[in-house]
Image (cartoon, rainbow, N blue to C red; front, side, top):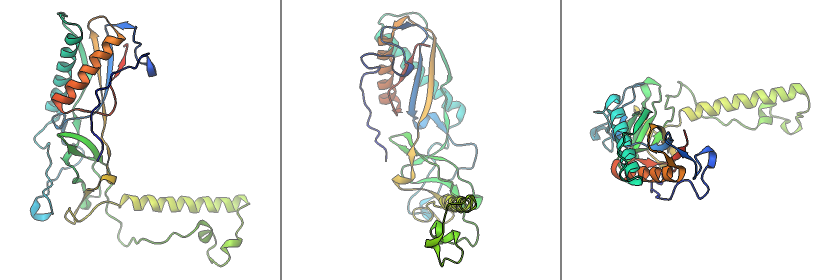
Length: 280
C-alpha cells in the first residue's frame, strides 16, 4: 500500500527555475503546468483492450466488483477537464483578487484514463483462459493509486519448475569436471553466453506465470492481492493557459499550490509530486 499522505509544501523553492521551470521573478501570461497524479475514480473508465470482470462472493472469499463499470471515457474526459479548469480559475482569482478578464485554457492534454478499477487489494488483471494480462487499478480513498500489471498467462502444458544449476554445470554436460572448465576462448565464452540467455528466457517465462490464482480468486482468475504485486499508478495531465494574467513565477507557483490543495481536497486527486510550472 503506497503512502498517499498529501503534502502542502510550497512550490518552486526559494530560487525557482529548477529543472527548466519558470524562475521566481520571470513573468508570463502563458504558463504551462504538469500534474503527476493518481486520478480519482470519476476520471476513469473501463479499459477497452480487454473484457472486465466481476467476481461475486459466492465464488470467491470476497466480492470483487469493477468500480467504474458505469463510466465512459467521454464523461471521464469532461469530469477531469471541468475539475481542473475550475481549480485553476478559482486559484488564479485568489492570487489576483479582482481579475475579471476571461482566462483561456488549452486542456487537450487533460484526459480521463481507461483502466479497470477495483477496490484495493483484490484486483483482477486477467482470466487465465484467455492468456492475456490486462493492467488494472486498485482504488484507495476513491482514487486509482496502484497498478496491477502482471502478465497473468497460463503455463504451457507440461512445464515444470526445475533447478537450472550453475553456468559451469550446464556448460559441461557430463557435470563430472565442472570445476575444471575454462572460460578463456571465444567459443567457450559464446557457449556460456548462450546458456545464460537461455536461462534468462526460462526465468522470464516463470515470471509471466507468477500470478495469484485461487484465494481470494476462483481458480480461473488471476490478479494481485498483496502489496508487493502492485506499482504506483501515476498519470500526467498538462494544462496550458494561452491567455491569462501577466504574473511572476512566484505568483504562478502560488496558483499551483492552490490548485494542488483544491484538487486534492475537493476531487480526491492524489499527487505524486508538486505541480511543475513552466513559462510556456
